Length: 485
Image (tube, rainbow, N blue to C red; front, side):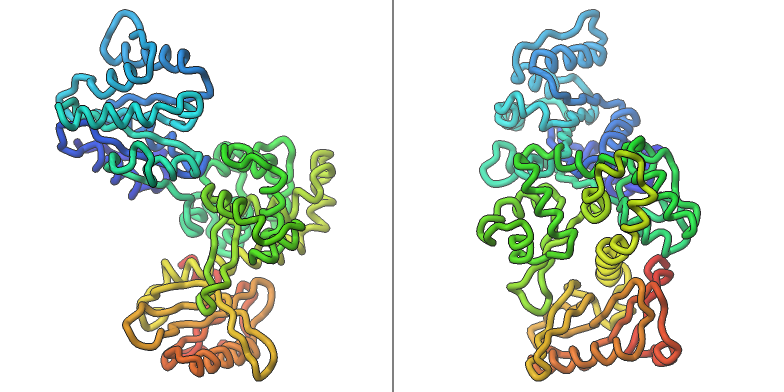
């Protein structure tokens, strides 16, 4: 079945192709697929459009009692079967059996969106599904392609894990991600790389933030960026204003909102280690293991290992809007509610550049090194990319390296393909390169293969003339233009 992606869906070529491949599975039995992803990524548009294009059935879960769900689904199935009256259901078992036994000569997609809402009031539902799918695998059934979708990542992640009833039953497990930084710039129709970076540091790659949340109000130029922040982000009348708060409130496993906000605030303030986070919120390191794990499972925190010290991971916030909220909005919430955005932004802009844009620029540089630059830039295929810290006993200091690119393991000494330093607001000079050379020598003494290590300077503010003249095989200079090329 050829199913064309509607033009109103931006990108999502890979996700659409996977969904079409799933519903075209030639199996004569019902098959199960699971689609997840954080809210506002366009999952509903994607799956609703799939049902429209393929003649499928789209069922939206709501926060309601089972009886209401039974009635709504009965109406939808009756319309599909051209029945003069709604089908009457009194149990989920009857509903699932009716869906899986729909008469169809070709694969038929049936989507149940916001599946976690249904399970919240009917915990038995996954087990009911398991039994119904297993029975039809043994005795035959219709080629129904049942797709369960949800935004509660902790719940959806556990749906097919461990001893969960549906483990091993799904033929599709698709995560719809946020748009990467380059696709986000295209989606927001921003051609200036510096403006694209600043905007991405606020709203990230969530499609809905442009369309519904700011009504297609995009920053027109670098000169317009400050005004755009005031009118679109710090404006209490725009939905984006409260979105960072709602992101936590919508996660069912985040019961202690104050604790989780404090953990995120600690990371936004630059306390990226477990000990730093614990110290910021006044807890012991052992007491924050659970909230860190829950925030990771919810997709709001990510743990980044130190490429050069395995036992020293750092945490980062995955949603830029949350970082922006904690660095700029939360400390001045009452003033912003009173429409004092101009005053708040005037005194917060420097903090935004240092605490939000600086770390965000570093992460984008690492993403470029891992996913975009490739072997041509580093003289080898990147195996791992991250940050790193190198101790320098002779000088009684340590050196932080913003971008560490290691080669793929080959049984010999680990190759260091590149060592990079990142700065947003400073013009980079020979001193930055000398520090990287020192790190390279220290790593060589520790047994790393640094014979072909390429030093890299990443800067949004530019480079001195002598650094520009020195670019070559040893030294690579990376500008925002190159990141977006």
